[in-house]
Image 1 (cartoon, rainbow, N blue to C red):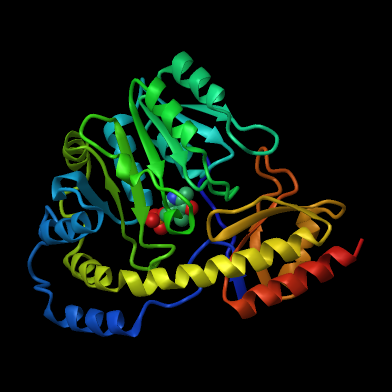
Image 2: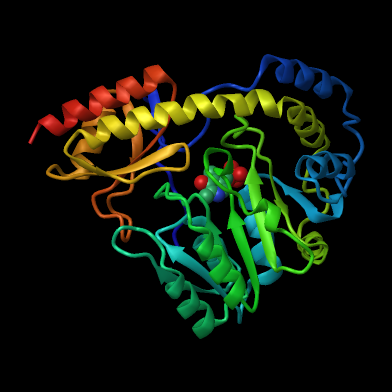
Length: 343
Ligand SMILES: *Cc1c(COP(=O)(O)O)cnc(C)c1O
């Protein structure tokens, strides 16, 4: 196998990993400095992360027994696959989508079955029915909005997954705050549905490494069996509880990012590029008459880094840009326009 890579190049404008362009609020930084001095560092953390789960549970109006927290939603996905994947089982993804589902499923020894999106990168519910009925995956992933396309999934696709699954369905909502709908209010004890969220994107805390899942109690109990003891350190538990006091401040920034997203979408649509409408904080586009890798390199030379997806299966010729600050986005649009004008 090979690992998961995202090229990191040291340039002034980095728009390649879908982080928030804004740092967290000052009030949270002060709280964190205080937490660092008062954590009982000689003691193991609260293994059940009770207070943290209570705080997140209040946000979603569920019980703490419906919440599992880990070091980023990637670790949530890993724990789900340790519990429900593994040798002799199969895991379904609908490509192109977030690469970590297949990557981690493969590491656990599960077989991966890849359903296909259409040429326009939308997903047909009949494809979901076909894959789930044929392969009976123990875990099926739906990323909404989907990374790397940015497209919002129709509700019919989640309905199709729930109608045909004989295992569990995981909806990855890393970008939920930028989207038009969430599956969160569909989580209930009688559905095999798990919804994941992260602090890495809207909440401006990619460095903290926190994500969580809301799911039926039995599923949470299964994840607790699979995860390592004390996987969430005391500092992180307290810093995350403090962060939840600033959620509304951080969500206010979502509007700013959405209006910049519209500006980028309109401007790139006016260039010689195909562009996909986005319900997230990034935009997928494809230069029509220039080689994407050459465009990517010219933009790097101009100090702007975007994600080069042009060699990924099903994304030939595509690039993906994260919405940044207004200045960063202007730098991106200038660099892209210049890069496209050379043949
Ligand atoms: C960024 C991203 C994640 C987040 O991973 P973390 O481990 O929480 O930083 C999860 N899923 C998708 C689709 C993402 O794009």
